[in-house]
Length: 74
Image (cartoon, rainbow, N blue to C red; front, side, top):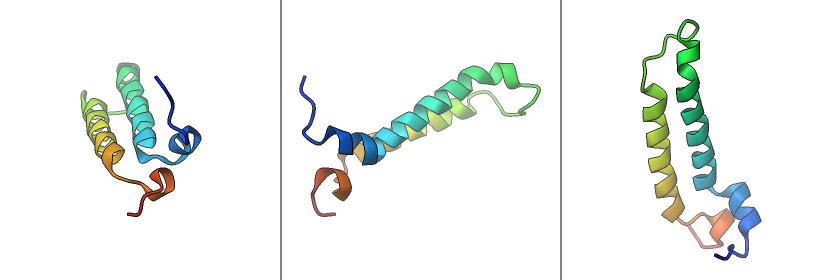
């Protein structure tokens, strides 16, 4: 395995990375939800669904050229 030459820029600017981090936070919220049921009246599966949609967005954003990361024209 070899890192891309501009891996720091990818970590900093790529939307796919941002969306994957958001999906991780939403997954964590799904795990914590049973402990917060009395405080937050949110239905089960809401954070899981949002996490799934976020991951789908991350997949799409991974294949779309981003000028700040790939150096290609949009």
